[in-house]
Length: 218
Length: 218
DNA sequence: CGTCATGATTTTATAGATAATTCGATGGGA
DNA sequence: TCCCATCGAATTATCTATAAAATCATGACG
Image 1 (cartoon, rainbow over the protein chains, first blue to last red):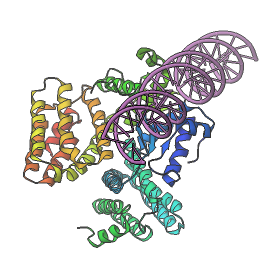
Image 2: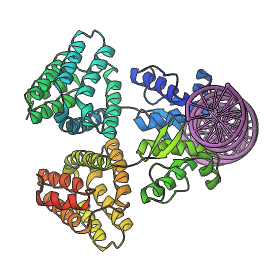
Image 3: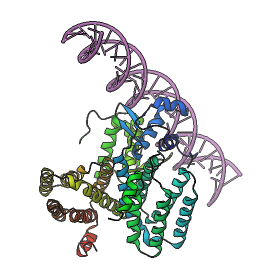
Image 4: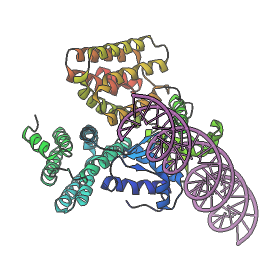
């Protein structure tokens, strides 16, 4: 999680910057001057450039040639986009992972859900939530898919921390338990549907959330 | 398509290398020495490193810290993975794009299909095929999704060129026309299902293809 | 025969120089 | 007097060249 020593310098810089962007410490649209950042990290500008490329691949910054990089702004449309992509990909991963899910894994997932219950701040909750999703999806054994989902999770976390999140505690826990119950009963399709709706719901604005819950499962 | 002049040098290098990897000119697992490539392009190693990062983001190379980059090897599982991801994401894109599809766009897509009919080599066919998919998906207006699909297309093209492709002409054209007909009739769900099956079929090994066609959508 | 050390190759990082774009200022025109 | 255009300076990205760290291989010694 925190800057492994054997990582290359560029990776460490990209991780620190990613944390800041996700946490909202750097506002969207802000230009990232490479000399400024290089000076802050006591490095030169070359590893900073590499860090920029990594962040660009994750969709956290946008790079305009000869005009530098800016923190990617996220509009309502982009938030919806990430949610839809997560829904599509996580459903795929769950379907492939389902045959390989063991009771031990599902128990671990339930424990992650409980950890989310007890979370008092958003960071702890997000950690538990991501842990839950990772536990039930990893057995699909599709590395490229899992990496894509992970990038979408970080994008989700970004606006989750940004203040205009909905009430996330109750419905999420309910959905998580519903997914686990369906999986334990062998009803993969039901679990997939709940997962899709669950992911799409997160990241809705509060008023949209309530309206969507009313028409739920239309 | 070919190395726009206003692109940065790193982008041009990454495009050339991507073409080579896709065309199979560089075998999977081969180490890419940055000095060697830099010398070939008459550049230094810094833009080469940036090009490596872009290729890594596309999944065409894998980078081990302090040990250089190697051309990503693609196994049968990885090919299946890319096909499944494409199916999931393209279906999503098509559903969102459907309301914005105009008759003019569908006509252009049909023309792209005809271009695929007339293609004599794999390169030309792949170009027409990608054009078709892009035409019917772009109106979804989801840039992140479209970029992800595009990366998956290049990954698909890689093993399409690698020799162990199935007979790709006839079934593809039939699927394309079926998709267009369904879209013209307003049957978005039908079009989405055909598209999903179509994408999953491409990239199957020949014997798998025939078996899958027999048990269609089993 | 195994292990350790040394050398060569390769990746990674730093510093300096070059080119391009943006912002600000100044001058001309309405 | 105000607005627009053009020119210039400064900021910024990009590239080249050079040095340092690390890994792998080879060979010698125990």
